[in-house]
Length: 307
Image 1 (cartoon, rainbow, N blue to C red):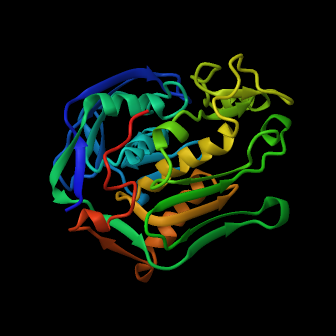
Image 2: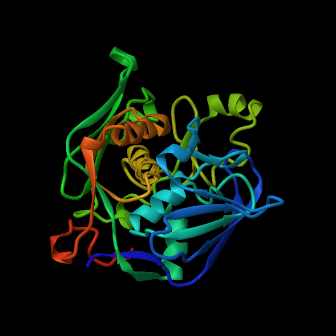
């Protein structure tokens, strides 16, 4: 049987929120089988649990936000990406503020935390959402066109194409494909950082956003070039970060997907629209498990590979 996974021990991190600039503490704890991923706002007078789900997403401007009632957690996508990349199913995430810390702007610090805590198999079958037929969402036309799509696939792969019309971005790889069964999430995707433009910073900060952002946790560009002294971590870091984001955005559905995802100029909002479009069509998906591990797609049955 292909089993569910949680952490062996508790692990903690301290940082600041990218948009809020607030100091925040995270405590990642093991959770029983079939719990899923549950954020817990422990700073509130009465702690509030926010289980992740496609319908728990309350805002997708600049980041993915989950919420229950008035309790929210912003910028969950990088941590969710690391959790998905390592194949974890069940986790409690205690958080002392309303935004996940940005750390270095990628998911690699979260990967390190999770791997340091160790991964434990649980005596329950790992449940997947298998896409049975194509599902697509689209917006705009011509130069404003963007879309995202699921196709059936025995595994999980993603293809993302970007189009920013910026010299620094245009000189890098514009399209990235990643297959969980053939490639290595930790090596190939996890180190890709979020990015932004100096021309947007003043507007964002006027609106109370990007208060914790800087060259130590983002790729920053002026009108022509990358301003970070150490340059890029990957030749196609911009497109790879969009893959990183998509992995996190899609995992809020609550179970790993068996699907091929492809997208052009998509973002947090459209990724969530795609999940909701899938769930709204019950004939387009099914829940599956694998009693025989050898029948499971590559990338899910094997232990997570290290750096």
